[in-house]
Amino acid sequence: MFSSKSPVEVNGLAYAQPPPKGTPESVALPGTEKPGRSRVYRHWKVGSGELVKTLDPKVLTGHDMFESSANRYPKNHCLGSRAWDPVTKTWGAYRWVDYQTVKQRRAALGVGLVELHNRVGVQGKQYGVGLWCQNRPEWQLTDLACMSQSLYTVSLYETLGPDATKYIINNAELTCVVTSLPHVATLIELKKELPSLQLVVCMDPLDAGEPEGHTKRDILVPLAAAVGLQIYSLSEVEELGASLNRPYNPPTPNDIITINYTSGTTGNPKGVVLTHGNAVAGASSGLSTCMHYPTDVLISYLPLAHIFGRLMEHMMLWVGGSIGYFHGNILELVDDLKTLKPTMMASVPRLYNRFGGAIRASSVEAPGFKGTLSRHIVNAKTANIERSDNPTNKHMLYDRIWSKKVSAAIGFDRMRSMVSGSAPLDKSLHQFLRIAFACDIMQGYGLTESYATSLCQSSNDLTAGHCGSLHASSEACLLSLPDMEYSIDDKPYPRGELLLRGESLVQGILQEPRRDRQGHDGGRLVPHR
Image 1 (cartoon, rainbow, N blue to C red):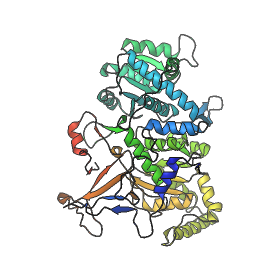
Image 2 (tube, rainbow, N blue to C red):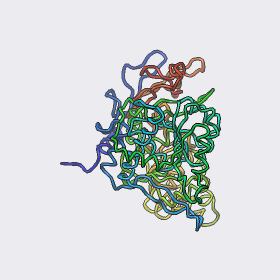
Image 3 (cartoon, rainbow, N blue to C red):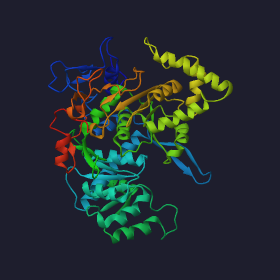
Image 4 (cartoon, helix red, strand yellow):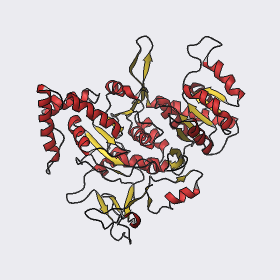
């Protein structure tokens, strides 16, 4: 009998099952301990078998992840954004581009980018393309376009100062940066200090709304030409690629998917070199913890220059779900949430703190009957979530009369799963939000070097104050640090430096072999720093 479920769904749900009673979620491998080092731990279902590389043997790269969904769900909503209405001075409803259209556009854009590089003498199987903008559909479109031709992207942070921007472009030796209109003038100004940069592709129209002779193109192109830059609009590059009618040049698992710059403890940002194999393993880990479905909708606001946000979008695209982008003002994020009504969200404790404060002020801290009822409901649901036998954050009555209203006030009418990362989430806040929203809220731990994944709570885990168990693609152990008086023999819990190894872990640091050797050691268990 044929299953209507995709392989990623079938296999992901298998790893998401809770372990048998009495079996921990992370299990130790016998005989792996060494002096000063604990035993190696793994996901309970992996055990001594092979770490998970992919949930679908036909999906080995980021290119494959998207292509499998585009072929399976061509009419599903893929990328959505809100348009500004200059008459009403408001942001409108979400407008969607389906998978089929994104597939066509990314193919054309990928060919166009390769052709522009060829024209300025840049050739070869792999080279980087810069991405500099806020979260928007064109960011993901460009990333997918590069994957289709075995190119990789290098993201620049939207808020970077000129020194860091120059460092990344020069360190990655970028010939082309795809960017939003506000950054075009900055790149022209910095060009004299960017010897490799020759091409700028603007995501926004260059000929819209101005009289002839006074368009953005008329102003910017001569300025760029004077310093040795060529400027194109994104639509021009797509049209160029479509006219050439060239096939995909798909990547392999060992090819680079991104060089992700992250701030080190000292000195300049370090370029973390990540492969397609890392990306697929990372997405497999995430989906093994919390399965996404073709009906799910993700709100995209975490900067895509960070690996956390990037991974979440990989996961959504692999299952054929929808990604709605915030309109650019983080202070108005709730307006986007109310309009989109997402089912999935990834965020950081800072935003969850804001949500918790606003909810408490309007409910449990409110005067009169509203406050009394809210406190009673929270106390009752707290008792349910803390009980040892079958804990739950759901309540048949209170979720309908209270949690539903609390959720709707933020736009979480359909929310079913949230994940927190990048910093510890306060334990009491974690439980309060679980009670308030009556949905899964998980905390995880990961690094840029591990493609954002390493550990995460399962949806079955309703405890707080920790990061859960190991993913199916990773293994870990602790190393004693005598100089810091941390020991794996400490009581009540062992302490030490966390060592990680797995399929999602970094291949190296760009142009820094010494730092590379310090943080990556030929596949052996290595420090998390």
